[in-house]
Length: 557
Image 1 (cartoon, rainbow, N blue to C red):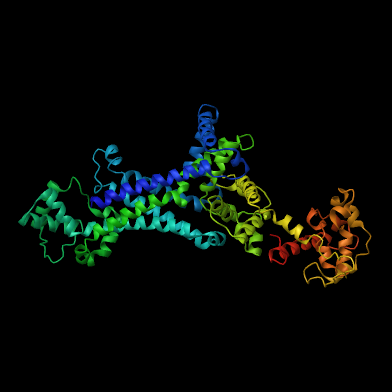
Image 2: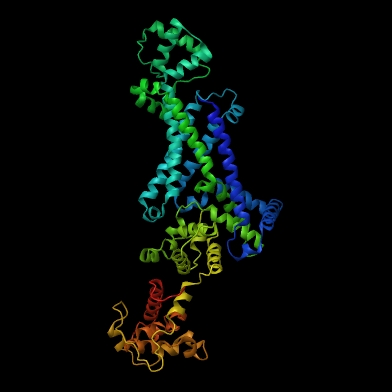
């Protein structure tokens, strides 16, 4: 195949860009600020923490944990297997198949030639194995696409990066199959090999052509080749002398051979176009594009995910130095495979279905956080939505526990809050509380504004008629009991809020700080002798205040 200046320059350019991309990523890990710990540790401290941590692990009992993580988590993907066997199968197929193709096909002139004494890419079992490994990768890609199309939460979060990665893999694999198929039927390739290695002419060349046309599926357009036994026997003898040491029958390459049979009717046109060379360039440069794209795409997890898996097993953030924590968090941001496990099991997934804020989903929140620390400019609305999503998180630890890569998502959510506060984006609950505090409180000489309670699940007249202000709710409230002067601290206490609502003073009730300090312990609602849904009402009042802030009715900038 072509070995011209274009391919050589392309290879060197791709390797250079790949190297620069990885240096850029390394620099980001050393300089990127992810949380307060990162601001306490510069690049030198982080690099030193990485070296000391590695040496401290290797020369200690932790080396056993390190080896175990490499074997079970990185190579065998045990966490993925326990969670979803179909996804595990897809990942193993792509990973194992592609790595074997990379080592024994792409690097065949270095690896295969050194490992196998008689290696020729056109001999068996190498013909078969190359197609088999390609089929394994395509099977993995197919399963991955199937999951992203059929599983609704995964489909919802599948973005351009996921589609580009799968498409590029499919193009590399399919172009390789079609390339080999085009070479099988190519008369031009046959004649080139004869000129380079055989130099046969006349009847000998005709006999060899006849043999290859029958047994190797080469299409000799415009030629009537003899098919008698004597000619084929002569061709077989010539093949044994000149070709058999390098070529096995191509039907062992089952995918490429099938592609060759499909293309065979158009073999003449393909040969005139020099299709094998064109397909070679397509396949070659698709591979180089993947190499260049790797540092800036989800392919980067090939490098970062194993690091995250190992670090999660040998490092405890609670006792680690700030520099080590800063470095780990920076790498964790790039280690995400966007598999969607965290999103599938998120305890506040229902909130996303109600509010439609993509940032509620852990996988999308992580992507937004990565963009934020990378320097992307987010609008005020986007920052507010990101803060809102992070505040809705219950910190249940489920995403961290289930992450197959071992990313400490819990630590990243804390770092996200710190980063947003550093940029002046405070908690949405604090903003809402400040925005509605004092609402409905008339100034001197002003009339009280009355309004009908909204027609919601709990704001119904029959709920308030039952309240006779016995103050049981207030007396049983642990929040009220925690304050020496609750009216000064909370504005209104529970029974007063119920009374205000019954009188139509909705803004006054909504502006009480009691709503935002409520623990939702339900003690007041459980103790109420009249069955008034007090806790539910306080919760709804808090959400009304939040919605007012969100809709921009109050200026909280």
